[in-house]
Structures are given as C-alpha cells and as structure tokens.
Image (cartoon, rainbow, N blue to C red; front, side, top):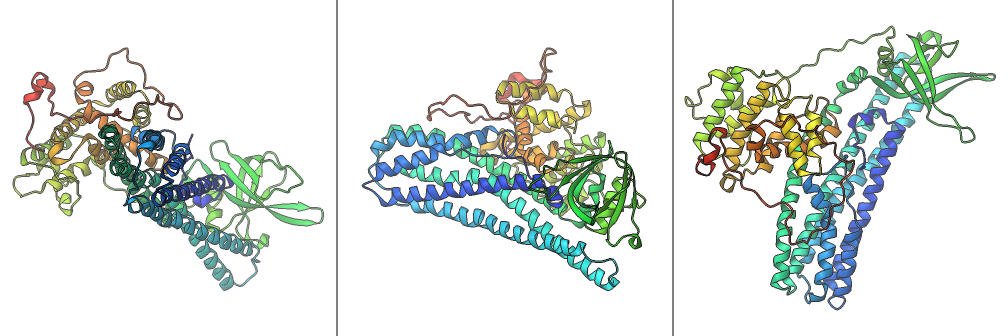
Length: 609
C-alpha cells in the first residue's frame, strides 16, 4: 500500500496520527531529494568524463534501476505503471548499449541537470521552506495556547478579548501554514512522476541518437519512448485535472465556516484538558479525545504520557453534558460530562469558546449552535427538457464543424440553461465553445452525477483492475445497473464523443483527452475528500473505456451469467518483462458508430467534429 492521503481536515485536528503520516511524507521527500542528488551527480559524471564514460553510465543505470516510485492511494493507472517501471526499463537498455557509446551528449546539461535542479529548487526546496514555516507556526500556536489556557477568568474583559484575538490570529496562521504544507508535500509526490522522469527520458534519448548507436537500437527504443511520452502526457493531464479539484477543496477547507461544519461529522475529535484531583491539589492533563455520536463513546488518549508508566486510552460512556459557569471555576471554556463509569462528573477544558460549543453540540449539551443555511448551486434535473437541450447541443456541434482543443466556460452559457429546451442555437451566432460548455455545465449541475453516487465506487474499482478484459466486463455490467434515463443520456453523450474522437487526427480529441474532460463531469464521489480527488484519474479511465468500447457496452446487454465487478489487488502485481521494443498499448483510432448501422461503420464517418 502507498501512503494514505493527507486530508485538509486533519490539519485542523492536528492529531498524533496525522503527525505520524506527515512524517512518512517527509521521509519520502528526503529520499527523493537524495535520489535527485545522485542522478544529478551521476549525470555530470557522464558529461565530464569521456574516458570513464562506460563506468559512469553503468553507475547511472544502477541508480535508476534501484529506485522505486512511491505513490498515493491504493492503485495505479496503466500509464502510472509504465512510468513506475520506466527507470528499470532505462537501466536495462543502458546495459545493452554501454559498449557502443563513444561520445558525450553535448546538451546533456540542459536536458537533464537543469530540469532536475529546478525541480529540487522549485518543488522540494519550496516544500522544505513550507515545512519550516509550518513548524514555526506550530510552535508559536501551541506556546500561545498554553499561555492562553492559564489566563485567569478574573482578568479584565478587555485583556481577555485581546488574548482571544491574539490566539485566534496564531491559530489561523497555524492552520494556513499546515494546509499549505500538506498541499505542497502531496503535490511534490505526484509531480515527480513526470517532472523527474521526463528529463531522464530526454537525456537517454540524446545518448541513443548522438552516441553513434546502430539504426536497429534506435528503432528498438522509439516505440517505448513514444508510449512513455503518451503515458507521461496522460498522467500530466490527470494530474492537472486532479490538482484543480484539490485546490478548490483546499480553498473551501481553509474558509472559516468550514470549522463550524465539523460538528455534523459522526465523530468529533481534538485536544481537551481534563481536571484531575489529587491529594495535594488539582492538575490539568492534556488528552486527545474522540467522541462517537452513535455509540456515545468518549475516548481519551494521553497527549503527553509519562515515561515511567504505560497509559492506554480511557473509554467512557456518556450520560449527559452541561456547561460550567465561569464563576464556578477558575478556567475558561470548561464543561462537564457525566459517564456511567465514574461517580463524579469529568471536567474538561476546550481550547476556545467555539471549540467548547462544538463539543457540547455533539454531545447534545445545553448550548446548541444554529448555523445559517449554506447556499447551494441550483441543481438541474434529468428530464425531457434536459434530453432536448443535450440533443440540440450535440446536433449543433456535429453539424457546425471542428471542436476546439479545450472546452472553455464563457459568460454566454448562463443564457442557455434558463430555458434550455427552448434555446434556438441558429438564432444567434453561437460559438462552439459556448455550446459545449453549456452542455458540460448542465451535466455537472445534475442533482446526482449521471453515473450516480451509488455506482461510483464500483466503477472506480473496475477501472483499477489489472486485467483489461475484466475491466471492460465489469464496466459493461455496471452501465446496465444505471437507471434507464441515466443510461439513455450516457449512451447519447458517449456516441457523440465517439464521433468526435473519430476525427482526433484533426481535432486532437483522443479518448484519453475526452476522459480528462468528462470524467469529473459524469462521475464524482458523494463526499469531497483528497482521497476522492485522487480517484479522478480512474474516473477518466472509465469514460475512456466507454468511448473506446461503445459498441460492446451500449449496443448489447451483458450476459446474465456475468460475474460481479472484480476487486483490484491492493498493489500492482509484477508483470513479466517484455522487450522494450514492444509497445504495451498501441494507439487506436476511434471510428464514428451508430448502433442501427453497425454493418456500414466504415462508410459512416461524420463530418469533422
């Protein structure tokens, strides 16, 4: 298994488990940094040592061969598998051509050294700077928090307000630095898949072409190079689409109102201070606490366990919760809980007034919080008006001409979906980008994704399957589990995309590109998390399969004896090593299809769309 994703919501809790997972990312970052240093060092050896060229290349190939890509999530796409194996492929090829090398690649510095140094400086360097900022803000916040919690409630109101404002400022700075650091360190993990491989690929190609290699060896390398470039481009496209979604999620998570939403979660957790009475006085002990609403189970884990004793978690069953009045205790933000296990109430101190209210609301205390309703974007319906609108969009696009390379959203779209069924596309000189954006916006705004929340997880699992036939079969079966209207609309849209891809030589719209464009539109998880965003690349693969195998999926129902969708293995299985000259996935040309005229597909190409 790879590293579990770091959720932005974990930054607010700052639990010990979150810190441990963050440490794993930091160790991986150091490992990558050391690896890049080795690659740069070895590359310079190749450039500067013509006499020792053979030895330098041997060491370089060994360095590449031992490195294994780490990844986020539980599975890899086919393209990521190609990228993950790329260094091993490079190393094997270098071993074969080592004796034939006689010249030094003159431009190797620009191809290899500078991009890797740029990556280390702009990506790893920036990540380390954000780590320093995060550690600094963390120390400042918890130092200020400790001081804040020791303030007497008898202080003047103005002094208490100033203290509250100062703590709130430090808390915001800490949360902001934490979210930025989590975002940056995960981005580096993903970016290195192509930002590190591409310079090495370019450097390797220069060696092969400029070092007087035989024509046969160069021809052997080209198919793999082209396939790897395709994998890199596909992975980059998936990364860009995922990055945009994650950035939007990050912005939402950093909004102050997001903290207030946490009370609706089934489990509330965070740091609390418990009043513990001893024979010689009273002390306040810091715990990391979790409260499970369904079971009313309250778990307290010591945040600073004593070295000489083994302190495990304390589990208590909640009876009731009530606020402590300020005049009854010389601490702020306090509340009591009654439990079945203890005869006396447990007095707890939250880290702020807002935090106390969250805990009390979760425990159904005496101070409920009323939140203002959250404005939601208007939802579209999948009805006859929607079908009419989509058909008009498709007819307009397929009759007017070529589709541009990118779908752009323009202000004119708002005029389309107010009365979509009555729009006359011929009354105004509409731009194709506007029409395609309007159709995409309509599908994106449905109350439920076209491929439904219920089937989203099964479709993702099917796309993760190692076996291509099982992958297709599972998606075929799942497509026929969609409601009738959803499948009808999906078939209408996918047939249009097949026709568009049939002219990919002119409009550059391949099934892979269409998957990137329509994957997040047709599929999405009900809960928006980083883990769900990382599965967008598999949503794109589902749409790509629907386009490439439209005839099989939509023109014939699956066999009743078809098995359930296969569960993918927890990690990619080793594949038998194939010669580097064999392309693992040849490019395919998608033809325009029509279920009613399957016998004459070769003569039924639509105009360039």
